[in-house]
Structure formats: structure tokens, C-alpha cells
Image 1 (cartoon, rainbow, N blue to C red):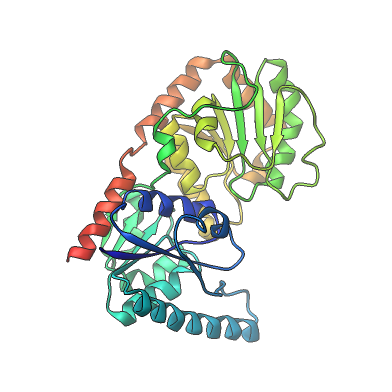
Image 2 (cartoon, helix red, strand yellow; image 1 turned 30 degrees about the horizontal axis):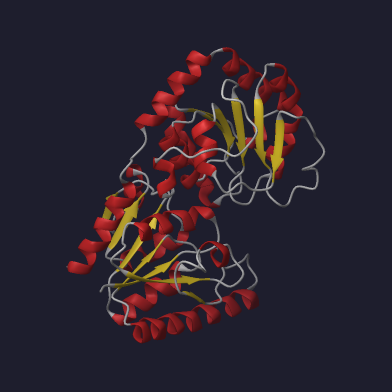
Length: 350
């Protein structure tokens, strides 16, 4: 049996594509590499053996702090190499982020294949630095290849969890014949987006819309607005069912979220996270905006009045929403997880 180490940590954007890949490798013995006290403890811990190492990204210009981080990284590389030896790992797969560095470097030292999946249009620092040490770089966006000229790249899109491909029942009190707006700021929430949205909600409710607002856990004003047709939740685990039912999403532009919107054919108002590395969410979102599947607004330029009016106009013009849904569907790659799994198999067989 092939033994695979998956290194994915921190956010849903890193974890969900890796979990989708794992679902498509049922004949593999899978071990998981993560970081202590991150989301993988909840999402992965009861599915696959979970190993952790202490790594973090380099911060600012503090030489002392960065030296400490570098020494932890070196230690983590040798910890992962020891894990590879002990578990007799055959190959390593990672979705980037801090955890990818020790995983890729340990695989290189041990002489086994390493594959990284880069979901964002603009590749992250780890991908740029370490893609040369990977046998293959799998891409979420085809256009990303031009940023990695020295790497062996292959476009597979970004996998989503299997439940997105089949109808999921929605256990929320929302009638079937009303428009539903879903507001989602990613797995961490988005307080600034939440503040904008709450100013717009009364107008949207007047038009008969229901609103499910996923606020995240860090919004002190999350409970400040109440209405029977407005549901504010910190998190909702049935995102597949929620987006399948939604008529419109107001969302950040993380690569994983965009893929879920495409699979569920959900039009969107995209507000990229302005502090994302290399502004990658803006580049992600432009692919959807240029295709006619979404409207894209920089956060610093978006006012509550503009957001309110754009959504009101869409609610009053369901034909436009339908056109956007069709364009969104055209961006979907429904077999992404299978393509990525095949890529993993090919790298092991080489």
C-alpha cells in the first residue's frame, strides 16, 4: 500500500482541498502533518493519524525573532524527515503555507517525490521558493504557470469536498420560494465585511430576501442585528447545502471559496481581503469578474450604499443573477479532486 504524507494546515483554504484529495485516494495509507492548535485538529484528527510540528512564517524585520523561526524550521525539517523514515512514507503532498516548507525539504532530503498544490492565482512565497524542489506543482488557476517558469506545473483547478457534488438538505428555516443571500468571510470571518453588510440588511429584507450571515468568531457586534429572516451564525458546517440554495453570495475571494461558488453555480459580490499576501485574492476574483460570474470591489472603495444598491438591483433582476450563475458554472471543474489524485498516483509511479 502506498503511504502518503499530506501536509496541510491552518485554514479551510489549505485543508479542504487536501481532504478532497484524500477522499479520492481510498487505497492509500494517509498520514497528516499539521501545526498544533490549528483547524486541522478538528477537521483531520479523527480521520487520519495527525502529526504536528511547530512552524510559523517569518515576521517583519526583527532579526532575533526571524532567527528563532528559522531554527524552528530547521528542527521541523529533521522531525518530518524522521517521521518519513519511521512511517515509511512514499511521497509527500502539500497545499502550501508554513507547513509546506519542512514537508518539501524533508521529502527532498529523503529522496521521495513532493507535490504542492497552489490554489491562488498569485503563488505564495513558499510555492515560489520551493517549487523547484517539487516534482510537480498542481495549479488552481491555469494562468499561474507564468509565475513559476522553472517548475513542472499542471492545472487541475482546486478540489472541493465531495458533498458539493450532490444535493445537500439545508436544516435552516428558509422557505423554498424566497431569494437567499449568503454572506461569508472565509473560515476566519471578516469583521469589516460584516459591518458593511449589517448596514445593507434592512433594504435587502424589504425586498423579501432571507440572509444567512456567517460572521466568524471575532466580531463583537455579531448579535447586534435581529430579524426573523436574518440568521447570523459564527460558522455553518453545511456550506455545500447553503451555497446550493443561495441565489447570491457576498464573499471574500479565497481560492477555495471561489471554487465552491463555481461548483454550486452561485453568483457573487466579491470583496477581496486587502491584506492577503501579494494581494492574491484580488487576482483570484478578477478571473470570476472578467468571466461575468461575479462583481469585484476593493474593500477600501466599497461603501455600504454601493453594496446595498448593487444587491438590490440584482434582487430586482433575477435574469441577471441567472446569467451570472451560468458564467459561474462555466468556470467549474467538477473532476478536480480526481485529476489531482491521478497526478499523485503518476508521481509515485515515476
